[in-house]
Image (cartoon, rainbow, N blue to C red; front, side):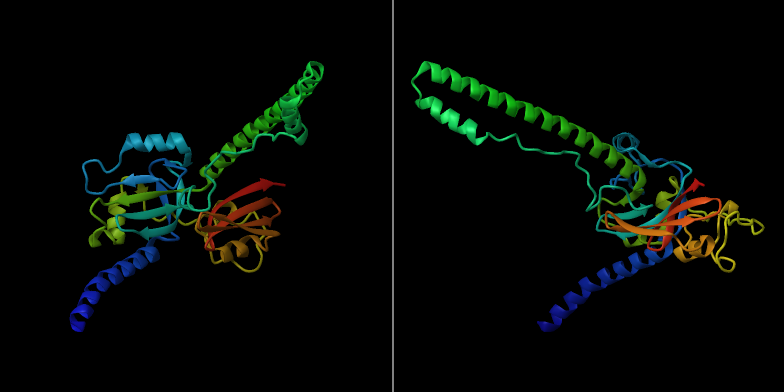
Length: 303
């Protein structure tokens, strides 16, 4: 009986181990690579659903609806960094530039609540006294005072509701902007579960061939010289034209190219830690963002 139990455990464990090894191989192959997109992608973790081997691999009306609802985070022709690859029971997540806004920890609700202004103690007392008071003159005076207190409370509620509406619009604008900056993802889906044959680099490329160009970007010409000051010796990375950094460079290479940053900060985008480093240069200030030590985007402000 014990032998039979051990055999059953082994039969269930071997596929799981093989699955984990396959996912690790895919991570090693894809994560950190830069790809070129052939279609626009929505700014949400919903991303783009792809069903390989079916008559309709991509539902374009649904894709268009997501672009309309969430905005376009990545456009056709953009280069994007593969920041994460994950194999699940019925899909393979192929995450780009952060994987899309809306993962755990991202604020997706624009609602702001505020309680109604409470009755003051004086208003409560007047309501109780008015029920007991019999004198018409005193009742009229008490009622006028009570109406004034109710009107004051209504004005306070109106001010609060106006402030709430403004706060909600601000939150909506912030969420829209973060969606445009949070990347996107492909969800390669299999209705009957991810088959073993799909967990290979070649299968991933085939599934996404119509939407992603996996060719390596051409290296910058060797004769290009830096327009920015270079700290130390020749950088080991591959800077872009004009000596600017290029997506996919390691943080150490960017430091070697641009020098010591004057400011560094970290933030979370979903489960992803994004490091922002600001480099002062003779030509302007370069703000670079890194994920796991890899450059995913940068911008430059002239002096």
